[in-house]
Figure 1 (cartoon, rainbow, N blue to C red):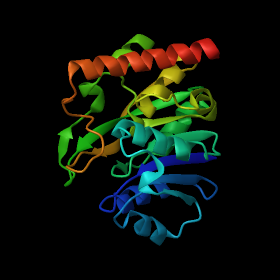
Figure 2 (cartoon, rainbow, N blue to C red; figure 1 turned 30 degrees about the horizontal axis):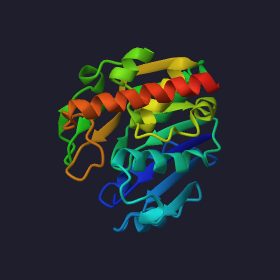
Figure 3 (tube, helix red, strand yellow; figure 1 turned 45 degrees about the vertical axis):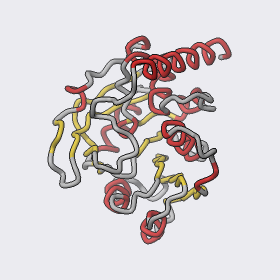
Length: 244
């Protein structure tokens, strides 16, 4: 069984195309679990219109988290909400505004069935009109399964990841720090597991003005903020290792 876990927030412009690209690659016993962070547009209505029994929505009010919660933690908590409900042996992460290309599920499942604990495919970065911005994410950030490299510069891009349920069990609960859910899952797989990178781009990773995250472009965060983020990652990893 496959579980696809997605976090949504005001994604009405893209969610139909993304869900369509996912559902056509799944079997009847697979599932899509969507955690919505209090969308105020028609996101939930668009999802409901699919009327697909494979799709489950966890609908949060916007105040389910404190108003001051940083964006990175809102996204982490939203994904955690979906991941905690996942029943599949193989779990995929999905953004609300991308598009899965044909073969995305089959390629990842083949790697997982061959012994990988976590697999990351390449992606092509596009704009609203499917115009290519970056041909290969791997050319932008070369992949690495090194713990030290991941702490400094992660190549674990959430929308491109799939992993075994065992990796999720190791990763949950997510640390109570402002860190990325995808980097954390990548660290857990690097620590105790086999990580595989697939060179074929199977995702159209859409960047647009209302995107929640800004991966693919130069970070506007200060050096101090970046260093504090890496400190939180390292402390979280060390704590989990000690308590394992």
